[in-house]
Length: 155
View (cartoon, rainbow, N blue to C red):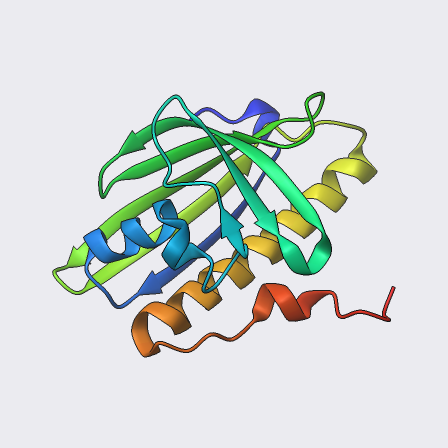
């Protein structure tokens, strides 16, 4: 994927599950809601919009799926209308029970301070998502990493 002026954030993780299970975890909100957002309007479908909701934060986001290559790649566009970015998942099976997942958020815009802030937030966020996915898929543990990232009462 070409990234605009190398302005991107990246997080990667080995998940010890078959690629088909890991891929499904990111396209099916019934699974994704166990480690990331709390509600999705439906499975990701190429060239369609989906709504993702984080009920604990009173926040929803419209996501447009641009690429959906089964067990290989997902590319979505998301963000505020004037500040959309691309998120790309690459699924690399290392063997029948191990999948390396790489998530890149690209197309970040703004001055250097804003870009640095976006890279930090995106890298941190997707690292928590991957850690949560790993715990859930490998051990059926819901760590609530995204829920607990911004507890009520703390600024």
